[in-house]
Amino acid sequence: MTDEPQDLFQCTECQAGVMHMRHITYFTWLDEELVTVPNFPAWVCDVCGRREYDARAISWLVTILNPETGKASGSKRRVRPPLEKRDGARPIRD
Image 1: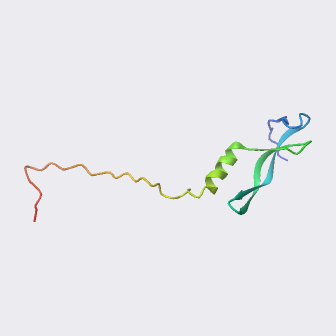
Image 2: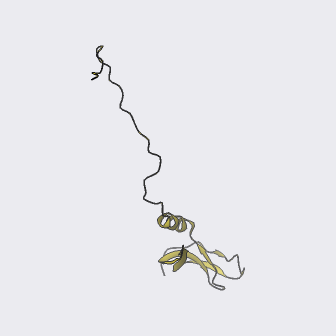
Image 3: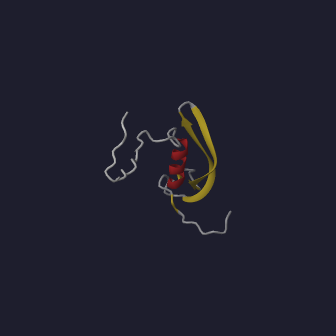
């Protein structure tokens, strides 16, 4: 246990327990593969065992597991260099 104070709140499932911050192993399916994440932050009821996952950690996990993460975006914006003004000179054409 840590010495840091934690915000505790009543369990919304059983109404009798108190939710405590714990680090658990999170399980989820990604297509047909089981993904496990150790030391994942979650609020766990001390009576019924209900788990509520930390919203920031879930957002982080969704970003990491997204197959589009790290890929270049489909729309590339091209920046054209400014046209230089010359003293009446025209481009040479063959």
